Amino acid sequence: MSRISMDQVKHVAHLARLGITEEETEMFTRQLDQIISFAEQLNELNTDNVEPTSHVLDMKNVMREDISKQGLPIEEVLKNAPDSKDGQIRVPSILD
Amino acid sequence: MSLFEHKVSELHELLHKKELSVTDLVNESYERIGQVEDKVKSFLTLNEEKARIQAKELDDKLAKGEDNGILFGAPIGVKDNIVTKNLRTTAGSKILENFDPIYDATVVQKLQQAKTVTIGKLNMDEFAMGSSNENSAYQNTRNPWNLEYVPGGSSGGSAASVAAGEVLFSLGSDTGGSIRQPAAYCGVVGLKPTYGRVSRFGLIAFASSLDQIGPITRTVEDNAYLLEAISGIDPMDSTSANVNVPSFVNSLTGDIKGLKIAVPKEYLGEGVGEEAKKSVLEALKVLEKLGATWEEVSLPHSKYALATYYLLSSSEASANLSRFDGVRYGYRADNAANLIDMYKQTRSEGFGDEVKRRIMLGTFSLSSGYYDAYYKKAQKVRTLIKKDFEDVFHKYDVIVGPTSPTPAFKIGEKTSDPLTMYANDILTIPVNLAGVPGISVPCGFANGLPLGLQIIGKHFDESTIYRTAHAFEQATDFHKLKPQL
Image (cartoon, rainbow over all chains, first blue to last red; front, side, top):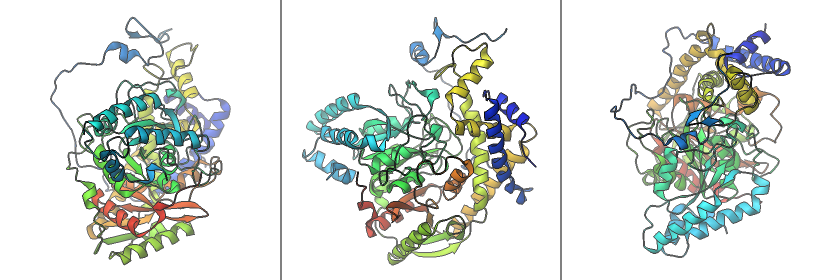
């Protein structure tokens, strides 16, 4: 049984904002199916009473003083922007 | 003889005695690059003009007796996922082809304080996803020991440049083995520090709970000096740890009498090549002669590490790489009809296949209906893997095994099947999942290609790793051999 269908791969690609061709959809479906099948070996383990680990060090909620600091100059910030005008980043239309 | 066959402490001595200048060191780098870079292809960007100016400035300081610090004037290469102000940083990806960072990573600031000279930026698998450098959008770096073979990855350029004598040492990053595996393949020394030892500020994030920056060097001593220079808590990285940074070099006593070594049977079992096994057993004999003892142990969840790693690292990557959307920096596709279209075109044109594959795997694992079965399950298995290490470290000082199941493979040999490529990392991945430190040191050759010995330590106990690695290095000659280019 396949773990992931072509329709699911298309949906996931959309969620991840990746444009993929039909040919790529076929390739990724096959490869992701193999990887997910491989990953299902984790089901051999009973983890009912195991806490998940998101982070290996015993630390949480690292706080600092909330003090304002000088930001970066606007020219620097926009230096790498593909398209900008009047100190702002320009993008294609959001609403049709 | 190349200047870079000296340890950094010896070079510093020569500088201090005015028998050598920083300009000499920087010349050595660029001359060697001129000779061998066509074959090795380690670098994506060179910093030659600025490096030569900096060398002159440092020589002026030297003349005034201001040569403070052991790393003064040392030529270093930096992996291209570590941002360098006004020096192009691509992370091996087309999507950052013209990216010109506006700040320096914390490790780069620390190198500047130590007065090293940045020679250039080193090739890598795109966004550090790969084990061979074949996923770089730009070029295949080649193994200096045999140019038909991969240098390993993802820090392939970092390891190859050191092995080829293009720089004295380099920085890499390690998410699942990306420092240790290429160090093993190229016959150099590479350490992944404890998670939290080195600031990740300015490291282009792949998997934030696993990534660490670390040093790649010719010798264990140089490695210890370089780690000391880049370690420490950083207000810009809330996951950097507030722990003391010892003088790692002081731990290089040569004395490992009474050291208790654990050898996991899983690290000499299925999927591990005979050559790697043999070299580790020989290495254990050397360590025994030096007064250490070893016993076989079990890390019973090792076989689950690879699946756990791919689910977790891909999930984290899918979130981290969402920032590459063509808006604020990097490549943007032309002629998109609307914003969503612009995102999709930009990302499909800007990312390579391996990156897309992992973003999709991660997005799938985190998506509604699959989160518990994949992502959360993997987080729970991570707890079991971490506990395996804790149990062993109750009784033993270090864990020893091969760094990689085999020596380097041929370019093109494993590109068709992602799972075969992933299997290279079975012995390094558990270390990242547990967050403990690990080093690879040269321990032999198979068909002219280097093999690496992996030494794994307790959280924040890089000192014991270095002491063990150094004692081994001093008792063997593998680190003295160099590739003929």
